[in-house]
Length: 254
Image (tube, rainbow, N blue to C red):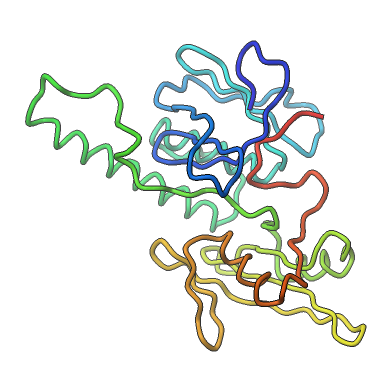
C-alpha cells in the first residue's frame, strides 16, 4: 500500500471486515497496522492498464485522499477489486472475471454487508437525532478474505503439473474444489525416490473448514488447513509459492 506523498509501497497482509480493509504487518498479529475505510470510495481504477505485469496496482479514490494498492497476482487483484467495489457500492460488478466459487464468496459478503447495514439502521431509527454517518468497525464480524500464499485458482490437473514440474517451489497447493464452492489440497510426497500426488477435500462449514479425512478435522481458517498438513508431515511438505506470487500480499514495487 502507498498513500499520497509516499515514495515506496509498504508490505501488508490484508483483511476485509465490513466496509474496511485492515492491514497487518504479520498475519499472526492481532493488531492491525493501518486501515482503509471504503464507505466514501469514489472510484477504483487500474494504474497503467496497458502494462503487462504479474502484479496489479489499483488506485482507490476516496473522499480526502488517493491510495495505491499493489497486489502481487492478477487473480488476487481481480478478486480484491470485486470485494472492494461490492462492499463500497453494495452491488457486484458485472465485468468480474472470477471462478464460480469466488463469485459465491463475493455474493456472501454482499448479503452480510446489507444485513449489517439494515440492522444498524433499524436500531438507530429509535432515535433519529443520533443516526450515525458511519458504522463502527466493531459492529462487523470478521469476513476473512486472506488466502495462504500457496493458494492458486487452478484445476486438479494443473495443480498436479505444477507440483511435478516445479518441486523447488514447494509440495502443497490449496485450490478451489471442482464444485466451485469448497476447497481442495493437493500434495506431492516422495517415497523411495518416487513421487506420489494426493488430493484432499476441504469443506466450508459455517465459519470453519473441515478437512475430510477418515477422522474429519475442523479448523477455523484456510491458513490452519495448510498448517495442519505441514504439522502432520513434520514439515516435510512445503507450501508451493512461485516467485512474486503471494495472493494475499499487497506488496512493494520492484
